[in-house]
Image 1 (cartoon, one colour):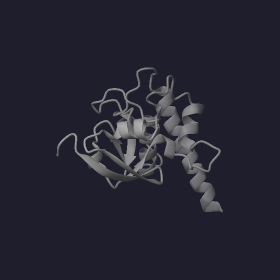
Image 2: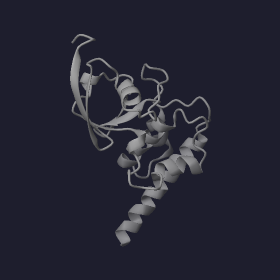
Image 3: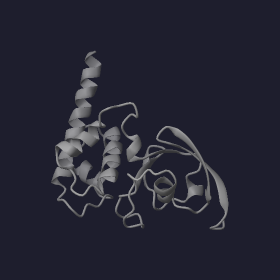
Image 4: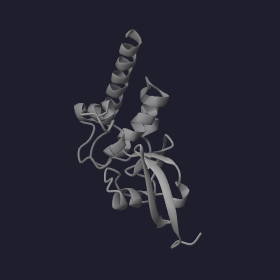
Length: 170
């Protein structure tokens, strides 16, 4: 595949069908930020080590700086902007937990941390400290110690458990 070959690219992003004509080798992070103005997805290392560009591709965390358009054509993508329901006036409970626990400083790594937390809690609703640390190992934060981040994940797990318990009572 030639780098300048244009393709008709189609994805569902945050629940919305999107069709664009893009170079086949344009990076997903560039499409999201420059073409769709979804700037919550950050660009930092550009080699897949920091997690700042994390998105969910078919409910799996991926570094969008490493994916070319042709690799994610006709897929389901969720960015940080799509985490909370679009009709909600509230933040997603994970986002709220990061605020409550001071799980960020500059905020650059926060979108990736939050999406990683979502995947972790979907798989392990009551994660151990070891599971939290393992899940977050692909997300680099240069500003904080990870204490606030770990507390935020734990608070989000508690909030999810409380919501599940409340739903089972009703």
